Image (cartoon, rainbow, N blue to C red; front, top):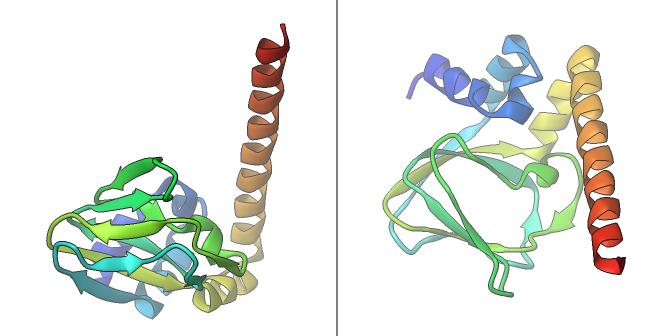
Length: 147
């Protein structure tokens, strides 16, 4: 894929779209593509999370080991929090078919944010909004359970 194709894919990811075209171009240039066969692990639960992944083609099963799972298809961002904080992977991601991803290292993502403070503020505001919504949803669920 070309850099322009990668930028177009990154623009499909709601969280990344907030960064703007210039920042996405820097991410596309600095990222790497990885290919997987069916059954290959993208990562395993407990692995150090030092990057996020955008699915280019194919799909990945994300399973947490407690029965919860989801499917990530083209355009999905896997490991969003790993872009901003050091952590262990809480789940395992397995290719369900021949697949490819764009790997964005946390160090690259942080450099992009440092070079574009406006993009960093937009991302911070989005995370704050999501956190507020999650807290509100939890309070509503708690109220329903106690009545």
